[in-house]
Image (tube, rainbow, N blue to C red; front, side, top):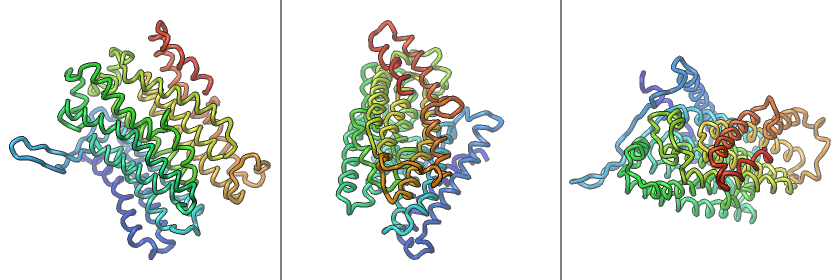
Length: 454
């Protein structure tokens, strides 16, 4: 069936939503307070995502060349010249890769939480929040409408607020969730203004229409740059880029499984995914021609992408230096995440959406492993998080030791591990960007400094 990928994408997204509704109203009456329900829903979604990956991306076509589209009328306003808002779904290679990343990490977090959070107050409510968080991110991934992307974007922010402040009886947790929520509103304000600018010029929120507007020359270069930078401010806050990074270390006040979900597959990944999805707009080239069009395009001249590259480079460098001065195991991983997100943003800024997404995928795997491993350590240490009070745990936690070591080597970019391959892809493109701009002073700094935080 031609529209099978659309149907599967909708089912993958709907399953966590259904689990959330049931968990909220009936979770406390179910066996084990219903923890198995959202876990099973996400596991089913993961199986469907893997099926899509095998059949569509690794299938005989070697990837989707023509994306699948589906739309449903959501709202019609006016009579003479009605405004029609459609709920649109698009399934392409980027969609399928992100579906697999989110469902895999979310399933592992759900599974880990059944043991880690057992016995906690509001246990059933915790799994309801996880399911809603997963649904919000999946909805953000599959939609092909910028306004609906913004709606799911805000739902992701709401879920992070609920989960970071899960222990709201602690003053530090209550302050952390408010800080995360308000900091993200700063970036989201610019994001929404950018969306409205696009609607005024294009007259549509649909991604294909937005891409076509660039190809048809509807944008003045300066206006395209302004709209692109405003869109990027949303990613600056959501993906914790300088200077709106301040909320992320405080997000460690939430339960450790929440840290894994936020830092690997959901909230922080949403910003990087958004600028990758909007890359044709930011770069000013025709998405329909595929990424090969970049070979003959002038995306190195994009002012919006230049801002993206500079912000990402600054974030990658300074966050790495902050991490080495921390003693809290979760805060070290948090600042490491900020630095690696900077790498991904640099990848987009220097013109390689594929390198950025590749690093997002590898980082999601080893960072989720590190956070879940830190949860195992904290649990064994009776909730002690100061690394100065740890040591000699290899014999006590042999499995955690092995998994933590492998994930650390990947994070460090050691050869033969995934982190080295994805970071190398970003650095290779950054070098090409430097070669193009080396006659200008601003083209020198960031690509030269990035290897020091490799």
